[in-house]
Amino acid sequence: MMIPLLSSITIYPVKSMKGHHLNSARVENMGLVNDRRLMLVGQNGKFLTQREHARIALINPELAGDGLILSAPGMEMIKIPITLSGKRWAVEIWNSKEVQSIDQGDEIFKWLSEFLKMPAHLVKIDPEYKREIDHNFAIHPSNQVSFADGYPILVTAQSSLDDLNSKLEVPVPMDRFRPNIVVNGSEPFSEDSWKIIKIGEAEFALVKPCARCNVPGIDQETAISSKEPIRTLSRYRNFNHKVMFGVNIIPIKTGKITVGDTVEILEMN
Image (tube, rainbow, N blue to C red; front, side, top):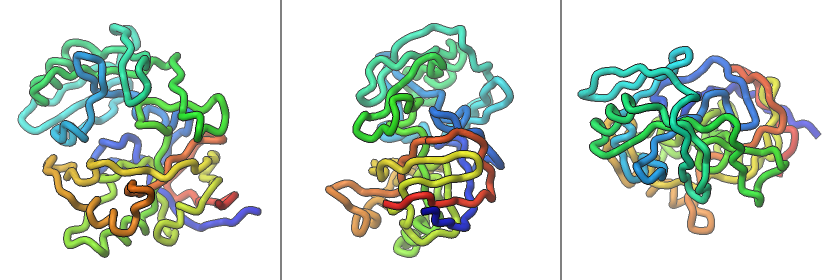
């Protein structure tokens, strides 16, 4: 049975792109086109994130054709081409130990290392490499993910953030939770009950609530960390000792999605 939910969406192209959203995006098996295909790694090849290095929040990325522009406080803006011909090496992200990637060169390495005050390489996932999704939640052998923590796309609801902000002394913006798709017009946390949804040309399976780390406590404009909003969220969104906000989703059918599309609930839990 199809249960239509008349809601619009906002599309964020990259979790760390502060204040940016797209009018439309193409959904691939790996997620939104160009989304989370680039990652910072240390000299040992292990991924670097805001969890341990909050200063990363101050780097502002912008895609420009086939290139990437980075800016950060106190640094000259840098523009580099995104290359597929650089050094190839296996990098590590969580339990994925041999993710094939392509280094984006010495120029961006020097820029990042100077700003972050530690060695930091920029790598692009090898487009020929398939990083598998946890078999306990995958719905098809073809399911794959790029450099995201574990799933191609994260969906949240604006009403869920509004509900959280009503309990906070200082409200937080949605970029703290780094979603790809934000649904408007639903009831708070109703996304927990959705199983299959359709947006535009694409269909998605909602497979796992998103357990939150400390990143929502990092102000994306200042890189200052706080116990909020996780402390407040943990009081009413704590399940099996994990604080949940948003749902990880896997594309079932690829295609174009556009801001203002309706969200159709095709199946509920």
